[in-house]
Image: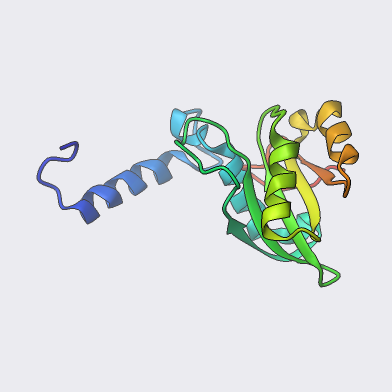
Length: 157
């Protein structure tokens, strides 16, 4: 109904093109480049896994399904770290008090013995997040990336 007589594949291609036009580092602020920032951050980390001490990463499902794109939901990836062990990386943008429990649940579901790394923009590496990550039975590492992570992914701590 939304796209009238356009075939589904063409309608989907038009949507993808519209999103890609707005979802890049040089784009001016727009709702399409602000939605699901945690997934964009995960995509950047997957392109440069060495930033979190990983050799490779692949996206994995969270323990709670995502209902829509407007609500922030941590985005996770599973891979191999530089030592050959498993690593679970969970990305978030914004202060999210559910990040640590969601990340711990994701690790428990996908790879209980894996190293857990939480990736957030530097402005979101709040002391509460760090304290919660450290309080886990198997503590998580918090990696802060430079505020301009959409342009270049740079670890700051």
